[in-house]
Length: 432
Image 1 (cartoon, one colour):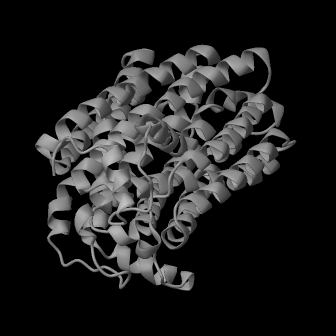
Image 2: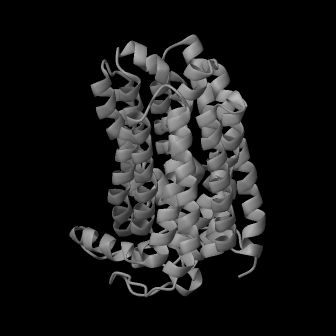
């Protein structure tokens, strides 16, 4: 396939009904912006209120470990919710489930803004998360609807570049809101963001035509997932990516206390430190768009896993012995987070490549495993919290090593027999 194949080329295939049910797109940028916004909901729902975590400890008169549960609870809902939205997207198309998820996100955000206790906050964060995950899981499936493997990895990198604005600006905006108002205002802003995305959804074309939708009853979803998880290619990429996500969420949950409480960084400056990491992520995602068609997603993925392992080990050592002070944490964290640009898009695109007719379910399973690992790492951070950055550093270091180990095992796993559930028959020639 030519490297000049574009988003509008993929979308325009719908005119003949061969690869999509959508009309030609006159504004590629508009569609890319909407998809990137849908993929951003996990970031904006988590990153924007990170500077407020120490404030919640005071306002709710609770312990740090309880406040950190607002992150792990969100991840529970976000990971398990994906298992619902993917099959719905395969059966009914991509847009209706996304709309339902955005509505649920808005309701959950309103509940968070009105919460009077940590228990209420945890409950509404769960609702918010179940709604928020519909956008990312089905946006990934929409990319798979339109592109083959390497091109999908390239397009996912483009989308991640665009969606990186959310985690880049989120902590900065959250810090400024705290300066002039309160943490509740952050959730009202999230309500507005959800409503805006819901309105923009009507500008997004449907990418899954009726003839390619799953006809299997939804009650068969569990058996379909069991069959998918037996596929060694999907399992290998999902597990390796899951270990990387575990390190990322240990960073997300741990740095507000490591930076703000331990090293006394002002909440507003914390947003700047967080944003630097996103800038690195954007840079390597841009590099990935340039290299993936030439070098292949597998090679780049393993290179990223290697860098993650080395930077994680350095972070763990610095956190344990206090080497380098604040810079001893910030520099290896920057490197670890930046290689997301080499790991995430390539692992997701490679995992989904074998499942064009089950892209929603496969995307759900990969996403659930990725974010589910974040649940465990965020919870472990609370369990082992000792008032120092050491637990965070140790978890990130172990996650990086495990990511590399499973990435290196990926070749062996991929050589095993493939088991795919009996669904709609064949791979669409124009997508494979």
